[in-house]
Length: 98
Image (cartoon, rainbow, N blue to C red; front, side, top):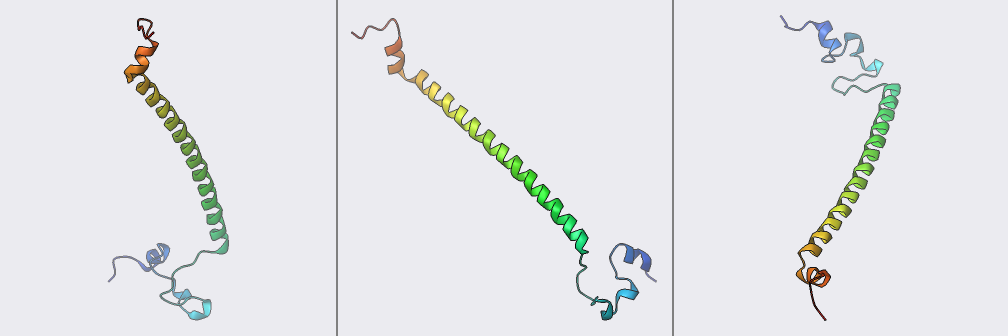
């Protein structure tokens, strides 16, 4: 006595239908299930769309990263200028370097 009915095993892909067990139908027991050409074509198109969208997103993120790095570098230069005592003194109106 089995716990899962045969038709359910076939529907879930756990077992091939009895009529497809002969090698004359092109099925050899133990070989993996292959998709129809149309299904594979549709899947390929979907995967290509996914790749394009991910590449576009990647390009946007790289551009954003580049802008943020440039902005960061600019702020670092500003901080260095503010912390550099020689530049502060030379620009001060109270400094007499003459």
